[in-house]
Amino acid sequence: MSSVVRPSPQQMTRRLVVLAAAAFAIVAPVIQMATGFGLDQGQFAAQGDRTLRVAGYAFSIWGPIYIGILAYAVRQVLPQTGESDAIRRFALPSIVAFVGIGAWIIAAASDARIATLVLIFTSLIALLVPLVMHGGLIRALAKGDRDRWLVAWPLGLLAGWLTVAAPLNLITVLTAENALPPALAPTGWAMLAIVVVVALTLFVTARTRLLAYPLPVAWGLLGAFVAEQARNPLLGFFALGAALLVLVVSLVLVFQLRPGVERPAA
Image: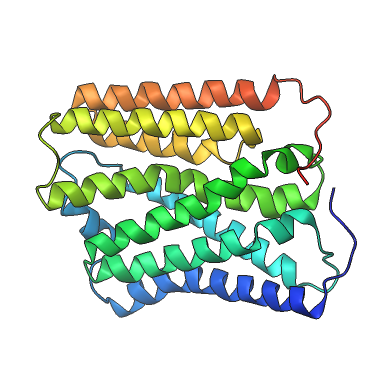
């Protein structure tokens, strides 16, 4: 449960950095679109979407993600928000992730393909590691705990979407560079990426039992089905099956496992 301990000046400085990083993440795509600088996200992806693509509507998930990021950051600088383990432990990971996704917009607009890979995987790892390490802390949060809805959920949503977006970014760049290894056909690499995404999603969900994490993954895989069902039916329906598997197993993990007595890790 959330602590009522008021933040110290040092902790408030940390929270202001979180807010600045969140503002950068949210403002970067707005500025890119407003100025028309470089490539937009669709143009960047179109350069290498011959192997695997996701329907454009799926990227609308950034709306809820950005709202969650803003709520997460603004809540921390409110004077009535006490310090808590969740706020403290996810502060630095969230800063890294927010800066990473904001910088990714700039790198993609500049067609800096390798930089996009470094940024998106750094952002993903920055969130996944603490989610797994502090799974007990997340499970211990009561349903009505504000840290569940304003720390775990916003960061879980972002981590879930990045779990889909990072492998997609990798395949997009490799395809654009004609660098997909010949060991498998392009469809084989796309299916392997989906298998890895599903396995990672179920592992993290089992650790956290946080529904916010697998939902964006299922959404992204459904977007892959919509985009690929006509062009590559085998890949499209494979993605659909993966989306259903993630959704069903995650619901079982979150709602039907007995929680027992959960205690946050020391």
